Length: 80
Image 1: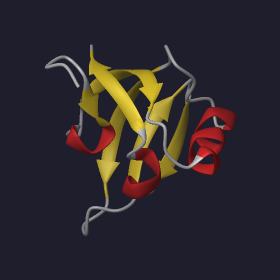
Image 2 (image 1 turned 30 degrees about the vertical axis):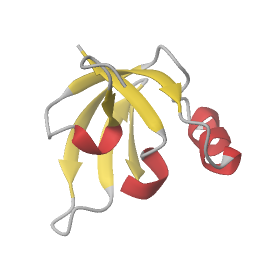
Image 3 (image 1 turned 180 degrees about the vertical axis):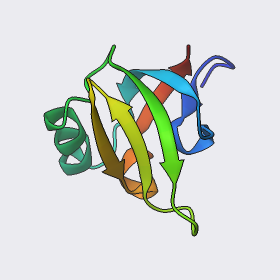
């Protein structure tokens, strides 16, 4: 991974990022995230992290979405 590429779990509240690609892990997670609108090139903002760190709420395509960190961990992103 280059210095500009981050993993989803590295993002803090308020961070704006763009989905770059998905790691070659379980395709079920990848397909679920893509069906929720998190396709490569999509921009999103981290809105809230639950007290124990899971789930994480993001704003994407005008709606709020809660994701488990493990599930979203297959996303590689870049900061905006």
